[in-house]
Amino acid sequence: MHIESRTFLITGAASGLGAACAERLVEGGGRVVLCDLSDAIDPLAERLGDAAIAVRADITSGEQMQSAVEAAVTHGGEQGLAGVIHCAGVVSVAKLVDRHGQPADLESYARTVQINLVGTFNVMRLAAAAMANNAAGEDGERGVIINTASVAAFDGQVGQCAYSASKAGVVGMSLPAARELSRHGIRVMAIAPGVFETPMMGDIPDDAVSALAQAVPFPKRLGKPLEFARLAEQIIVNPMLNGEVIRLDGGIRMQ
Ligand SMILES: NC(=O)c1ccc[n+]([C@@H]2O[C@H](COP(=O)([O-])OP(=O)(O)OC[C@H]3O[C@@H](n4cnc5c(N)ncnc54)[C@H](O)[C@@H]3O)[C@@H](O)[C@H]2O)c1
Image (cartoon, rainbow, N blue to C red; front, side):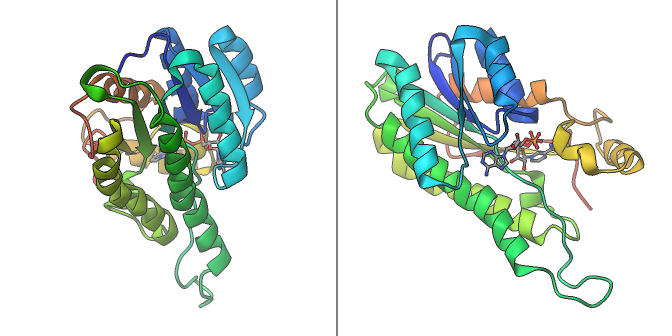
């Protein structure tokens, strides 16, 4: 899959990892559809010029995501939608039993799973259905889907039952989705980031952030969104990457 003049749908594009992917793909000559709930996709689309359009959509809504996918197919012209980088997601922290002996809020758990896991399935199913109509390229390739998991899928910390479960679900879907979509020439990959310098980390106190940075074997710092975007770019262009989850974490194993 080439990036130049191909069109990619990027969810969570208003911020952090998604925004970095949008910038990187446009730098590489690609076209992007910036999808997010946040209005911050508008100034980014303006900055990226004709290659970019902004579409507001909630990834958990079938109707809104269908419209976003249709906009992406149209933006792609004759070649349609070439790929998806799905970065939209939320983080949540809650103990099963809090320090006052109160059980965790069930709705809050379900909300995290709804956005991170059900939202990922929603984006995949709609994008895959659209990409299955593409003309086949080299090796019969029609598209690529890159989902975003987290190292919390493998080594979740205290308070991360909801977040870890939602991301473990994203990991679990990678292989069956890749196997199923192989007959359409669509690859499915996931990236499991460690700790990255994005607005999602904004609520964490500075001393906790520097402790996290120190916990990374090498390099001893948070990941940069551009480093995530570079891996997404490599996944797009390397057809042998399929059905796998890649940790991008400087070797960190969460305690
Ligand atoms: N930053 C990290 O350290 C880190 C680590 C591991 C995994 N991740 C994952 O990477 C992804 C991107 O995170 P980020 O750090 O860029 O966070 P971010 O908060 O900067 O960006 C997430 C974006 O998703 C959007 N979003 C949230 N819910 C949405 C919905 N229902 N519909 C549409 N858009 C929605 C938000 O508006 C936001 O712009 C997330 O899935 C996150 O769980 C991040």
